[in-house]
Image (cartoon, rainbow, N blue to C red):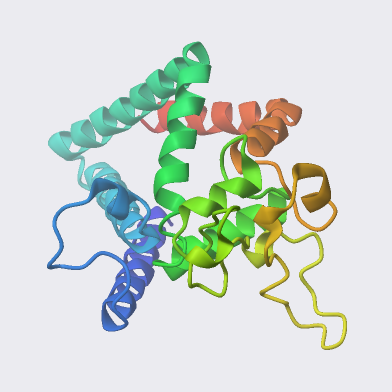
Length: 241
């Protein structure tokens, strides 16, 4: 089952990556190495995750069938290393929660916001998060974060300094009601000029709070559920290893 899952992830990720290359999107072969561009390219993440899952499950399955000790050791040691890494990340995130939150916010604000229009997969993911969690932007500045994107950049003193038709706007996924009442289609310009409004005025039409704070509040409210999922995954890894 896991081998099949890994193969599917590799196949879908490879297909998506090739499609992006055809249309000039995503990571280019000719560009200098950019860590964050790779991290925020979902097709590359899918390929890497698929390879890890496929190779690891293949080693465990073949090692068990053939009673191959080196393969079983590799499977066991890798699972143990992954479990230890997850545990370290969880402890660090708990002890240095404010520092981790600040770093995560800065990275997402600097990278995800600015790349929003450059990668359709990243754009769809951010739209889904904003619509689902009912948030807008990343940091405590919320909807004002979108001024960091070239298309939405906004200078309150001189809005027309940005020639984009989306200047001072926010993505439609920030809107409380993005549907066009006449045609029932999504009005992609429902967030037009919302950055020019103050928090209370904008809050009538769009979500104004940053997604990091909103997501953390959701996690806190469902802490037992997320904790149970983490423990279940850890138990499976320990027993498999």
